[in-house]
Image (cartoon, rainbow, N blue to C red):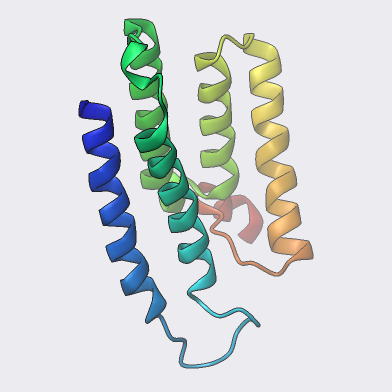
Length: 147
């Protein structure tokens, strides 16, 4: 019951935010779809998930596993830390740390998680900054680039 109530409130929250996002205007045309496409896409995905939670018939039969709750909280904390450290540490370091932590959280081994986190941070930075011309912060690595 509480899950469906939360999902209904979240669905209303998504609808209200969609109304706000619909009014986003850019003072200049920097891309063909405009600034409202990304928030509206995310809100529609969240609304679809909330609608699925409301309509799911066997929802009341599920029991929450304490281990799953702990992992969900740690995952949320990792993503919050990623958002807070994005500017100070920069894209590469914060992405590498978040990927490493999430890999360990989902029972990954130490060396493959460290390697995949590092590769993901560097390769995604190259993709976004060099190929797509999306400026991303370097953070602590700015010291090495300037010298």
